[in-house]
Image 1: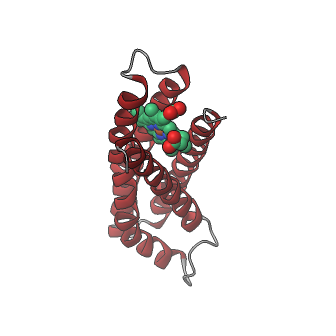
Image 2: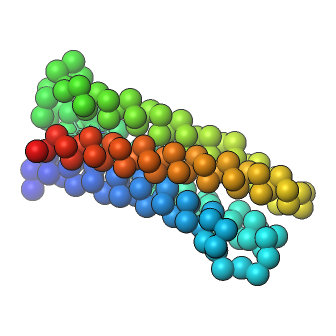
Length: 153
Ligand code: HEM
């Protein structure tokens, strides 16, 4: 197996982890997405689920630039000679990471705090914001995949 195919495989797997994490977040945050009897239980369950779910997304956040930069060096020798669409891909990655850091660093602690204080309205607001960010992360991820795949044709 060549270095190129190793990094291409890692890049592809990281893309799947990102999209999977965002899709799962959108799905479980939908009103019908988690089968629990009450809104209170729903918020409590979400606080437990997110750290595990976001573990996979963190792996993607690390593997995407490592494998991407390796591919870039193997195929185009460096950043300056990289095609415009790969440069756009890197820009979109930065935006995607910024969204994820907001989810992990702001909205998840807000959700946790609301559940600990039994402030259910605040919890619902944090959940709504998390969902909006996850939809953004999913759409940007899909757009980046289209960009990456379009290069192959
Ligand atoms: C720092 C971030 C990234 C870098 C440096 C990077 C770099 C690259 C490079 C060099 C290629 C090969 C292009 C070619 O040979 O024509 C590639 C392909 C690709 N990238 Fe990225 N990428 C990054 C982030 C992302 C993200 C965030 C996604 C989507 C979530 C993504 C999805 C893809 C796809 C679908 C392909 C085409 C399939 C493949 O060749 O494996 N990339 N990327």
